[in-house]
Image (cartoon, rainbow, N blue to C red; front, side, top):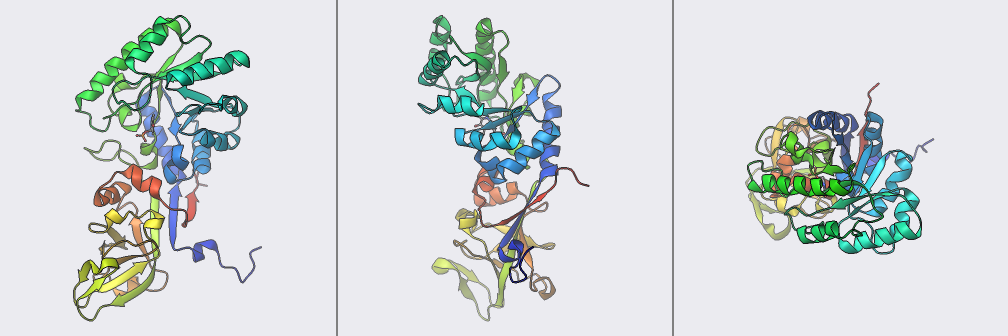
Length: 381
Ligand SMILES: *Cc1c(COP(=O)(O)O)cnc(C)c1O
């Protein structure tokens, strides 16, 4: 029982973050339809499921039928394994740091091998400890970030021992420009990947191909291959930035108003006195700042809502506080308990990102830890 003297954490915190698990599941189903029957559409849950909570998000998707999960770091995989049980596949996209191969075996995690030393170390480990574990080989098809270069891939293929002892589940690559369908990189990377995959299948006929992220799934069936790795679209961010958003919104972020004041004469607001507010303006300050993920670069163009009224940030976002000009909002909407909707259906993650000069990925992964997080269940009763 909660002692009468202790208020609920929702009462104590400065903002509420509501995460709709049913919306995440609906988005996964949309992506699964797009992948078609031949494609294993998984879920990328790295970076704490893009800031929305690794365990609740992954468990909701597992219950909906998702069987393949992707994380970046091994520790994310170790945290995820007990939450999912033994069955689902967990791929660790950064692969093993030297000496951590045994941790992959212990937690039943599939490494993505991107460099010749990773491949060599994994082969040595598999051989000496007699493990028959799946791995994934990554090739670089033009992004120049991670994966075997074309020359490294060719030399591994030409060497009869190059991939010896591996049991590759798949060949993987990543698209640089999937959110820009007209970009010529897409077709070039697809070509390169398809030809590497056919060479790879000469050695490992059952190897699957995985190329598409969220936006890649929208480039057409030619980009889908056998396994897809969507992340951001699950969380409601638009994977087709040039057009309407096919995903449903997932996040609602509401900041509590701490203080409302009217300025009697034109006056500066906030640090640096950088913003001059007009005579008679009404200001509301909320309990939320850049330590909570409201980017400082959002200050000049930031917008939000109080009920149906659009309001603007006044002055600079500071560490724990942000002030809005709420002059147009009637007093009745600003009483005790009033909130400002920072993210919601009227004002999305993509809107906040545009105003801050960044992308939805950064807005989501920046979300802070001081909110009360409320999860709407995946299955409503
Ligand atoms: C993060 C990541 C993804 C997911 O990308 P989204 O654009 O969020 O869908 C897929 N593959 C790799 C290699 C990644 O790093």
